[in-house]
Length: 634
Ligand SMILES: [Zn+2]
Image (cartoon, rainbow, N blue to C red):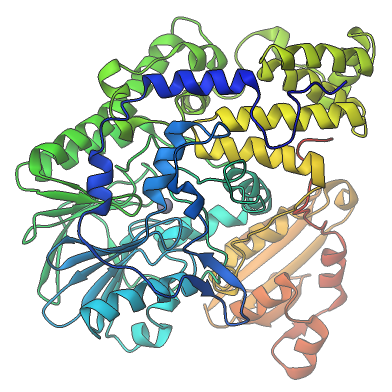
């Protein structure tokens, strides 16, 4: 029975009261972030929509104009404020000679001017948005040639747009070094190899790419507004940064590096421009509590190392620096403020790490620590420690996971029924689906949306078509979204509501571009095949294949036995195997389906020694991935 309160897109009385209480506690009088985010504006782009070659809009600089007014009752006022700051777009001067284009993508692109040209840092996600940001820079700063490209770390929002700025030919000709932390390529690619399909689907929830933008829809991801949808490209680094203290001089610009592996990314680095007293903090110190474990799924990050590296950053340059800028959000100026900002960011991660372990050793489990752990008031009072992207709640569970794993030690929780089986029993225990929905309705009416969604989750996993449960679950998730301070939580909740109301939206954006697939190493190709083998179908099959890869000069052997495809490097093809001789790009083409084996044999790009049908037998054992798998229903 839908009550007055249950209406799509509107806040309930309970949500309005909760958000009013949040607004009371926030230090709204502190406007320093707005001063900093506006400081140094050089100009804004007149072209407000960035399009792909086919005319498709991949980024709209005016998409968030609705944020101009005060927070509505359908959004947490803290997140609304953060989104107002993040949505600002333009070219900004950090200090003379250092500029940033902000608001052109999830991340920032930065420009450091040398004697004759410009060093570019972190060219966004898409070549289209990177090109537009670079055009704005050149409009105001002239046609300077690119003298170096720097990737701060191995996440796609820091390299994907590189071909909007330079070409592979520019790099091959030797004129433009591409500088990145050691291990960049391995991590940039491997993140998408093993769990890439699931991460992509889940990223659709996390960033809300399929949601309408608006006061009751997607309003931002906290770290940036959302991800652009142009072409992701990649040019491999030519210069590895391996040690802290390593120094380069490029185009008259001195750069001193600090490697920070295992912080926000497995390969990441900060660096200092001593002649301008400016620090680039990559993504290690930004204006939010960052993720220890991103909601799309990833390996858990090392909070302890993160804090240690920030301590080192302060020790290295705290006496000299005058400004810190990063590849998200706006800079912080003046030595004292910068050091306090870096120190507070450090304290934030260290406090979460240490206090979580203290409570772990007192016997608390992740869900308990998440509810109990509170930040010190002094940290809570700083805007940049708020959980707009990471959250205290999911970060402390991640720290628990890093040290102790999924099992909380209580044997009653060691072997529970899986969701649908548990749901069947829960619903029966509650007296059937309709009675369970009644209970959920009561919880909803009392504003206990967390309990409502848990009850309704059981109903839907027992009977996904139950209309009353679907409608109420969408409404309850939506109220949780309206209440969330965290941008990704809001998008997660609203994405669940949207799929229950309108059907599955699949994977709206994918990182599987030609450049990224083309960068797979031969072992990564074999790994990506192995994880698609349909185990039970392959139980009784044995296949032995040798691969002579002509351009890498390596020979590999793959062997299928017991449903598992192992691979190894070999001196030569092994006896009894079918041998394929081909290049690495051809191998990638065969695996990704852009090339046909028979056509390759006919035109000579693939030669086969033995029975070519061996490969087809392997292909027949591969299961397709599902980029549209259900999430809020079984
Ligand atoms: Zn980033």
